[in-house]
Structure formats: structure tokens, C-alpha cells
Amino acid sequence: MTTSSHRPAGSHLLADFYGVAPEALVSCDAIDALLRDGAAAAGAHILHSHFHSFGAQQGVTGVVLLAESHISIHTWPEFGFAAVDIFMCGSARPALALAVIEQALGPASSIVQTIARGGAVPL
Image (tube, rainbow, N blue to C red; front, side, top):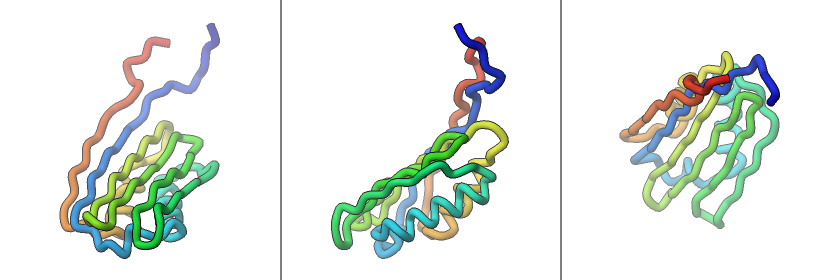
């Protein structure tokens, strides 16, 4: 068994955004830049990102991999909907990433769940 000084505790935010302008949900480049801006605001360290478009005026799926975990998004422009997943550990602040993303996408409404992860893991 190995030991580590890094505990796996973190915050996992799950956000559903409704009523987003469809044009805000179709560009891989724009969404990649947005999630990177969110990661920077949270104080996270970006390792890599990958995004995929499902075609012209179709949805995007993508992830920004972080040293602290990840930010991912799945969009449905035809429904004005985006599902955003932000998990960060350490000193990174996922709520700051969420604020940047929410402000840019401008949903009419949102539902956000916050889940504490890994705090009870015996090491």
C-alpha cells in the first residue's frame, strides 16, 4: 500500500443551464476558451482540453483536464440547454469557474448541485 499527502477531497458542481441562446452553444473554440477562462478564475492548472462538435449548429461536448480534476460541458442548442460538470480538489475554487461560465452563457434559469467528494476516504 502506498501513502500520499494529497487527500482526494474536493467539490463537484453539477450545473444545468436552461434558456441559453443557441448560438452560444455551438462553437468548440468559444466553449473551449470559456472553460479555460473558468479554470483560470478558479486558480486551477490546465493540462489539456478536447472538444467535439456534432456538426453545424449542433451541440458540443468537451472537457478541460486539470491538475485538480476537470471541467466538462455537453450542449444542446436546439433546447437552449447546457450540462456543466466541474470537479476540483486542492485550493482551486470551482464556484469561481461556475460563475464565469454562467455569466458568459447567460441562462434564463439554472439548477446547481454541489457534492463533497472524497472527504471520508480513510487513508
